[in-house]
Each structure stands twice: as structure tokens, then as C-alpha cells.
Length: 145
Image 1 (cartoon, one colour):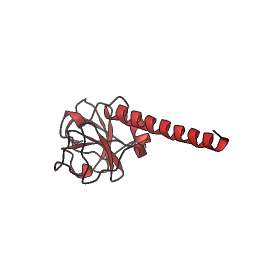
Image 2 (cartoon, helix red, strand yellow; image 1 turned 180 degrees about the vertical axis):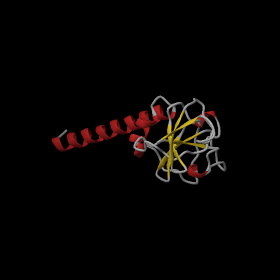
Image 3 (tube, one colour; image 1 turned 90 degrees about the vertical axis):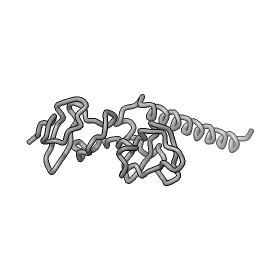
Image 4 (spheres, one colour; image 1 turned 45 degrees about the horizontal axis):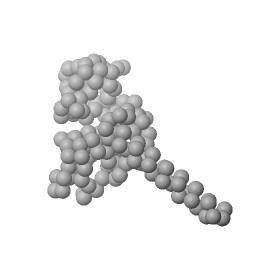
């Protein structure tokens, strides 16, 4: 094998290693072995959602500049746009956004935890309870001034 062939072989091996690492990372993210900050820092490793997407509960996709985790197994004919269907998808937060906009949780899988920060109606709030599904200003939130 000449040096040019060796270079090609090393390049191919490096690409394969990178592909294996990306697949391993996606698997760890989808089984919730990684935290949301680590997941969002590697946004580009996840597929862009489209109308033909199917997958298992826990699968992660990109949609409208955000990452979403499927709550249910999604088969043919069941697929819905993640950014508009919170009953099927949970948004994975952006770590660069310290005070993200509050989104109404629909269950335990996306409820706010104690210490979570949100913005709601132009005001900043911190959750004072785990499993918080209430709107800020109603119950379970402390306003930050």
C-alpha cells in the first residue's frame, strides 16, 4: 500500500470513528443518559424532523431551531410537527437561554422542577416546587425582580 492509499484508509477510518461516536452519542441522548445541556450543545447530530419521520419514544429531532424528544412511539400516519404538538413531543431546552419562555406542561414528563427559570408575560419566575405544572403567578412560582 502506497502513502496515498494509506492516507485514504486513515481518512476512511477517521470518518467511520466519527460516525460511530455520533451514533453512540445519539443513543445515549435518547435513553436520557445525557443531560439537556450536553444534548443541545451537539444539536447538529440529530435529524431534522419531516412529515415522513417515524421513531420510538425518546427519539430526538430538530424542528424550528429547537430540539424535541418524542413522548410516544410514532408510526406511519401518527407523525405531527414537534413545535406545535406538545402532547407528542417535549422541547429540550437551550442552555444559552437562561430565562426561556414558559410553556404549559401537559404532564409529569415536561413539568418544571424546583429552581427552573422561565419568562412569562414579560416577568421572570423561578419554580418553587418539583412537578410544577401551574402557570407562573398562580401557584408554585416566585417572581424575580
